Image (cartoon, helix red, strand yellow):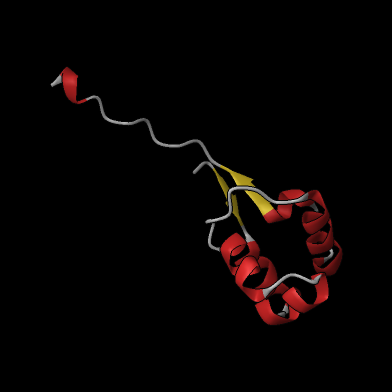
Length: 77
């Protein structure tokens, strides 16, 4: 998936645990984990806002984008 979540680095830099962040933003640890591992298909703006507030960051610090590698074309062989 081209959009990815960069929570690990932010939490490490802020010396904050996932549990602490989950409590501060009123999100279950399970849902925060789903977001952190990139398994979430969406994020509410209210959740993103709460993460940015608690981690003192911008949305671009939480989310990143990278182009996917082009898929190989087996027919061209």
